[in-house]
Length: 230
Image (cartoon, rainbow, N blue to C red):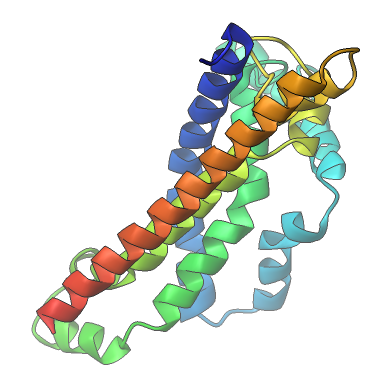
């Protein structure tokens, strides 16, 4: 049986993972489409900025988010003054940090899938009178579905496992920002916390494996369906 601490950390991690994935997915798809289908001035720089969270230390990302979206941050101060909304020291800030860290992984998975789509099918649909939006919704997105599913699950798994950016941006607050990785870190800092820490580590492995296996199964199922339509 899970303890109340483990249940709380698990629920919070799942909430943050789902929220960050849902919010980041449309923007990641847009960036992936731009990188896969369009040539424009500064594309290399844009590509580098999108993938920057992959190489930056997570603590640096968390500090940048704190400067931008903290209660007195460049953007955060206006959000609080105008809308009474803040990312600082609550689960919404943890979701933002997780989304930023997972974003490049999602973009990369969908970009590879978009590049594999035969653009002659899209051209044929446009030649029959379909608009660009309809072609995107009825041709491009269905053919890219395995990559979109993989991106969503990978983004979710990365969000659930996020630690450095989250603890730097929103600290370690029970019930608000203490996710599985942060709870695990907390237990390693107190005497007698080894056994509970092992339990949380095992729980984290189970969640990550379930996400990855689910991604593979969904992607294969979608690929089989698409092949059945050929």
